[in-house]
Length: 258
Ligand code: GLN
Image: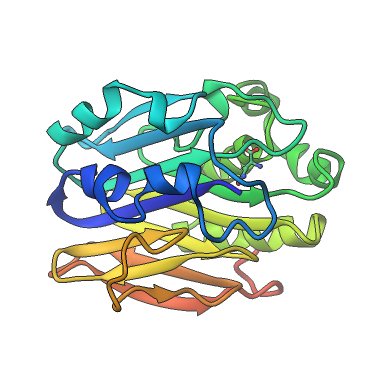
């Protein structure tokens, strides 16, 4: 299963979490510790995106192993961002290896990543997909489960659903339609990061500088804490940025989308 991470806090470079940490995303691309039998390496692509000073995301992604990219280490050194998301991909069997399938997915306001798999793809989620406007389906960046999750979530956000409600509702709806799915989702805006642990690993590190959320802890700092399964983490920008909520995702609450 893919690995991902997000940061929210005082502006910093993504170089340490992505490349320099003892168990950086780069290390997790070739030697992940906790794949739960969902593949062995994350070599089918990578992406890094951040919110730039103009408030919009900037992204670099490629369908190749992170360790082969000469551009990103130097590029990341020059970045200082208060929010960023990075991911490495292990393509689910049968899904295309293409730039458009690599997280983070992005629009003008949000960054998104999915670590996991939708069981029974695509039949199991056809009922959810058919409620989307046809043009949104036609514009899907890749024929993958993750791209559909992004399209569904973006649609709900644009309809005005609050971000935490939209993420929890999507997990609940997909888990109902496709039982056994792995749905670690990550949604980041300039001042907010939401992440779910749904049958996959996720850890959080809160420091005075900011909040790091990652599939696997990036070092042996004892402050890393695992997120319990079937829970949602919400980190909001404040003074200092803080994890505001770690709460269970309910399958049958009013949060689920009508
Ligand atoms: N199923 C998704 C894909 O193929 C995510 C893969 C993963 O988490 N390993 O892109």
